[in-house]
Image 1 (cartoon, rainbow, N blue to C red):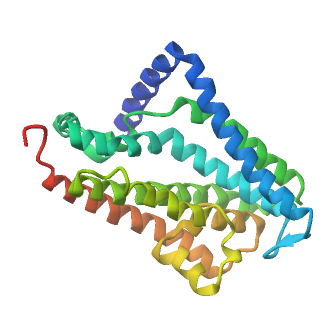
Image 2: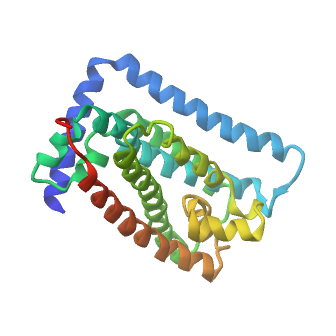
Length: 261
């Protein structure tokens, strides 16, 4: 664990050095994501001009939900997303060979090799939105405040797990640029509170394609409105999904033929 953190620290230092050479690109990447945040906030602000609640969520509670979504999204972008989008190119060019030859877990290297520095700046914006939402509401209970980071991490694990599952498919079918967009299609469901969906779809988003665990469940936990079923799903499903996705990803590597094929 300690060795992995030290290694990732070196990856981050290298990424920061690269970004300092192209600072305009760094700031443009940051601004593009800030615009995306503004669009999401603006969408709900327009809706709240016409109704006081959305599926039981007040404007202040929705700010907490959006802040939670932005925090998880920024962490995913900073840690995993850049690596996820590079994976098909690794497979097609044979660059994946270099990851497999290193004396480190290929799962670790593939999904953490290239941190996205701009997304750490986005994290500051996300935390600002989250803090604004909390400022509009009474203080959370001690239990909710302690549990909230755990569910945030579990939401992030769901993001990583889905990317690992799609990565496993990328290794098997080679030309996988199109299939990567499946992740964003599923992610669209997680970008809205799960209570807006029909009961059957809500269960699918908890247990089958658990994108509801990304932001809805952490927000419900900290707001004190999560049922025991939701809490249980938020604690159990993400670690299990990560174990399964990691197993399938490493198994898919057996079918990788390398640059010499």
